[in-house]
Image (cartoon, helix red, strand yellow):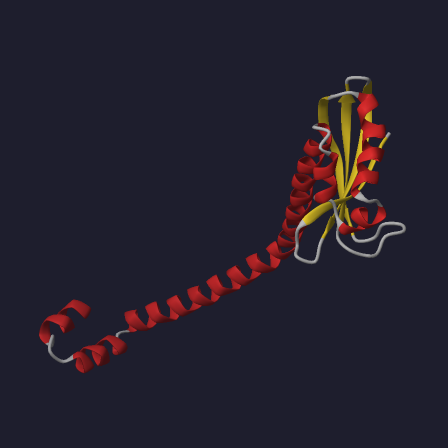
Length: 176
């Protein structure tokens, strides 16, 4: 019927539409398409709602990943005994606590006796917004199992904090 209508009146689109609109098959197709669109919209909405917690987790994971990158860059400077460079890339809270020469002297005293790093493995990492004695903010506390030339199974704890511009910087460092 549809093809016959198209053949019979190709120059009269209004008449074609009227004939198509009367066709029960076309009405059923339009009704099915409308129901399918509603079902598809509902499915998309449910999928989005289901993924919201995953997106939140992903944002936390991205923050932890960025903090780990900052940790590893900072630790590489420490491993190379470039304490001035490590101080310069540290968070303002660390820079305000120690001057660059004080920081370099303290890190040389703590790190140099341990010898070179033979192996370092990220043990765990925890995102938090609260740390004792620190203002609320975005922090990631990471623990690394580190084998130094003169100390095996050392544990380095690195605290990274997120600055106002979204970048991550080391704001605390401890060796056990």
